[in-house]
Amino acid sequence: MKKILVSTLAIILIVPLLGLMGFKALENLKGSHFKNYLQKHMETFELQQAYDFNILRRDIEKNSLILVGEIHGFHEPIQFDVKFLEYLYDEHGVRDYFVEMDYSQAYFLNKFNRTGNLDLLDSILNNWVVVAGRKNEDYRNKWIAMKDLFQEGKEFKFHGNNNLMDVNLLNRHLHELDSSWNLTLNANSSDSLQLIRIISELENHTRVDEFDFQHLLANANYRLEGKYREEILTQNFLELYDENCLKESKVYGYYGLGHTLQAPLKDGYKAMALRLKENDSWFKDKVLSINFVLQESNMVVKSETLPGFMQDEGPYTRLNVEYDDILTSYLFGVNDLIELTSPESKSIVRLDGYRTPYNESTRLSNMTKILPIGAALKAEEGYSTTDYYQYLIFVRNSDWAKPIIE
Image (cartoon, rainbow, N blue to C red; front, side):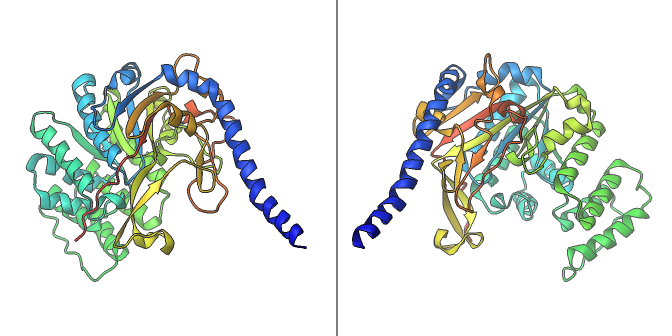
């Protein structure tokens, strides 16, 4: 009986281990062709080195809308954003930056660029949709660095196309647009009740036909109706593009990577980048998507949002993120990049270069996992990695975006 029990336990332990070893061996075998390609189409730097964006130059020149998709809560993508904006300004004439904020937040962010008022910046970030960036030193410093660029003479404009997040800022914005707007909000009322009052006033406003008032009214209604976020992002983007006559310009947008994918996922999800191309054929061959993948890196997460066993002490947790863990989050092809790079490095990888194998594969755009925790995006059948995005920023050992603990 003991022998049977020992044999059974051995099988229970050994079979999954053999399965995992077989899976990794097969992945390594499949990866050989991809690694040969990657070695010729990537530029790698130490984390402390400045980026050289030369590998991107020709594709930036060919496209009109340059989208970068970050994973929120990491230090390195934040640093990239500032440097990339400066590069795009200097080398490609970019003067317009689409930001993952609502219209009023972006209005006041432009005002912050002009004034440098830090209290104003904090009020903008107070209800930002990127929760990791609300009370965060790294994100705050990013906006300050961009303000410094602006005040050094590199003048650009923020455009916010996110769904309405801050009713108080909306009311404040309306007063700045028209000094006769004197609606006082009740701090004890819900946002929905406040919005009903604002909508009623706007619908009867003498300037309701002007773009700013129309746009703010529409977004107030979207909030009450609970309109789907990707639809709002897309509709607002298209309206702001037309209002600002941007089809003759090169434009930069920085979002969470869930908004920059140019093909549908298996669950039917369609990101803003794809919807732009579906809604306006002008965008069809003019969008370049550059997305981040971070490995062996730390993300800032509010502790209360995690299971107890994953929490650090205090309000924030430094969560380790890896995409080569078959149990919780495995990105097919990530081990090819791990083998070709060193710890504490960052790489710009071109996925759609000459004779790329990624245009016939979902490697680096398809995930799997065993346990019911963690993330696992699934590519839709009939699409390849280069349909989703064209460049990858692969970062190893990024620190978290440092929270402000009060």
